[in-house]
Length: 79
Image (cartoon, rainbow, N blue to C red; front, top):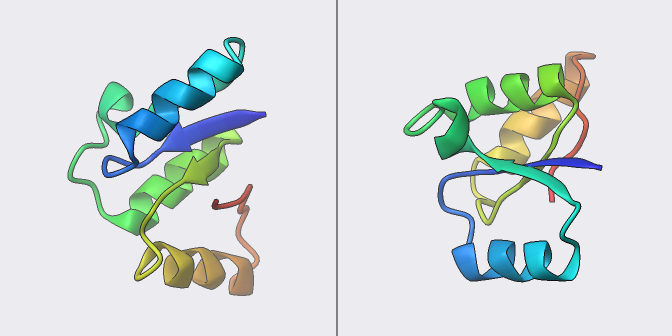
């Protein structure tokens, strides 16, 4: 499973995940130059890289993810 965390994802949760699953393939948007990037661009990047997005943003990410699905665009997932 390949994961991407958005810039507001709780760092304590990320550290705990990495402690429990040290081989997990997870990167942060900050690590790939996507800081302060619009949600649709982040979702497109995640889809192109085959990564599931981890986010606490239920206000806008969900809407943009649904838009991608409705348009028939790749959408590996959002948690």
